Length: 172
Image (tube, rainbow, N blue to C red; front, side, top):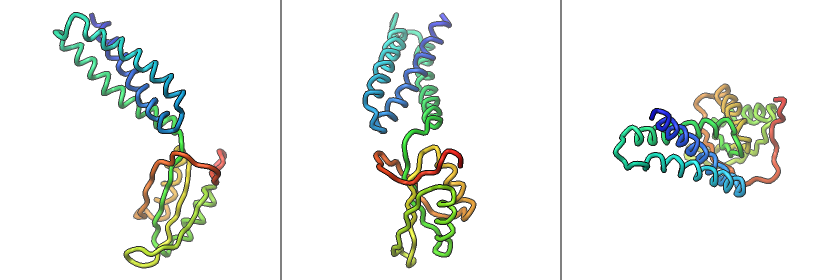
């Protein structure tokens, strides 16, 4: 009996972890890989659901195992997604005017490609920095920003498709 509950729980963990990774692959334009993962995901899902529905819904522990596996699978899938760190991000930095050149110099020293644009903000002239980076390099870039000025405003967004660019070497 306990083996059935564990099967439901762990099957759901696997299925939801695969779901998170499948969505990530779709966002990264890896359609074929997403389809293969989706096939596995749904196969495991059907096996888990059939165990819950076998004999009716009179066993609340099955429902709890199913729901617990769902929640745990989402959490584990997000951890896997962070470890994979696939893809690219766009980082926009809005440094204080007197610090813009320091930010540019430091980021470039670390191998990041930086494009600076002079613009007009609410409080006057500003320099906006655009940095395209690999997801796995985000924490390093944010650490640089924080060391130079912990109050610097920035935003990070997903970059779905890129071509060219300057990126830090693996040795950095």
